Length: 154
Image (tube, rainbow, N blue to C red; front, side):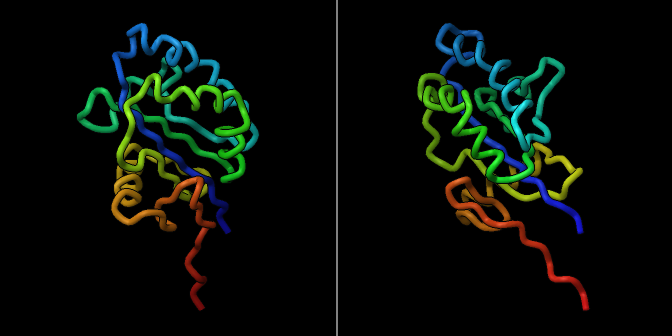
């Protein structure tokens, strides 16, 4: 039986240009926080360019919207990174750097081990979460769903 991993996407709309003084601390924290993710137990993969982050990748036509995607071995591994590492300190400062999002901006879903999510996958999952709320197709850390597999054919 194939194991599953947890994919996650989160998007944010910048409050100022990435090279602005307002976002200087955010930009300065990208490499250290990404390094913590990379070294975290249960980390599998994160979306990045040759520069080591995903700030130049586009989630939509909105050039102020940035995207982060990663894959984890479990919900617990992602939760530990998000809330129990130095990432939590940066997360608390979100309102300094990003506009408040009125719709869901984080979505989680299960993928087969060895596969990687695409930005198109992420768009689809986030749209489903916004339309339907948390379901096994797209959910949140606050309302997770266990891995669901179709019943074997008899």
